[in-house]
Image (cartoon, rainbow, N blue to C red):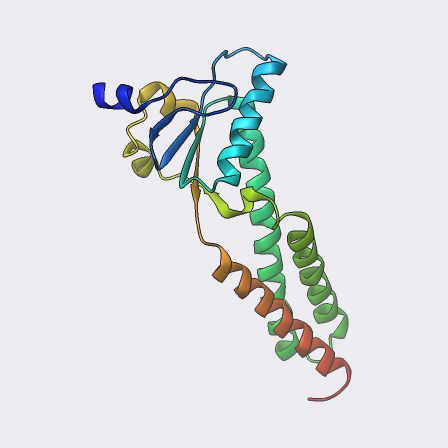
Length: 184
């Protein structure tokens, strides 16, 4: 525990405490709702996200909930786009006469992709995932008091995931267009 205390820097308005070079903690300095402290926590989080820190621990409950919801919205858009694309591809082959079904699922997949692409993928939060595995969170040695309410974000390479999403929507769109034009 003494080693952790030595590695940890003081909290200031411009930087977050660091347990190791891999972990940045956005501290909950004052647990009450204080606009100045909330603003400082958001600035610290934005800085950590921009620097692409490998692990970010968010202690302020409100900020942690907002961040986790924002990440869940992006994940929902991504999953919806992928599942609707798969559904559209399957519908083209399973129900070749039901053009309204596969056209609408393909359109919905494309709309989800556009929302994801233009509204969410440029956000630095899009490169993080919520760590929900309690065993992995426990290995971070944050202390019992922090583990209860903290939100843990882990940086990930999401380029393959994005490419897969775009490829599926492209294939689904191409199939629907070809089917509508009676090419196959």
